[in-house]
Image (tube, rainbow, N blue to C red; front, top):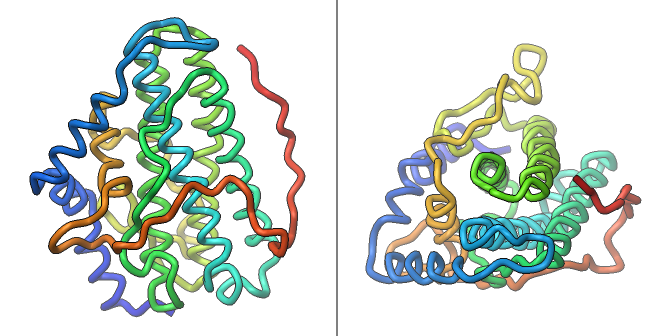
Length: 273
């Protein structure tokens, strides 16, 4: 079980303030952020014909979905899944479903012209480690889901194409479910709280804390897609110097090993406006 001291250490190292500080420091990160923002331009294609801003949002969304797919795949092959949740088949199945959903989102976005800004990713040290780092895994997962939710809320308000607004809302609902799922799993792993993009610990132990104890999804001050691109920068840029991120590069994963069980059947009907 994660100790109070270990959880507090992670929260102090990976709160929104710390993450923003990491993202704002260093020439390499600054250059990477500029490069990513530059990649977001270009004309739109496929079902999107709304111009540069729509294309930028689609590109950022595809990057987020690629990052999410890779994250869930590595969680599923980590000790958190194989050991921490070894007796919890429902939680394992939900994680597999989350992976499959993110892959479907990624493939759909690419099919309508989105271009991911990166397909190799980096994660905080201990992200896929043993039981002593489970809090790192769950807090990172929720932090990223919070950022994804913010990205799709920005999409709903900023897309000029109606079909893109509808798609953003449809995917937003699933990302919200993933945030709730992470809080359920955190409780099942005997973690007392989780810390997402707000930087404030939120209790997960029932009955005093529901699995989703917010009334409205939030943007955490992220109002432009360029800010979301910046928020993703530590996850797509090899860390340099002192960093809370590990140096291991994780390539995009869109298929799980055949040994992973259980399998999940999703209703994968392509949405339409």
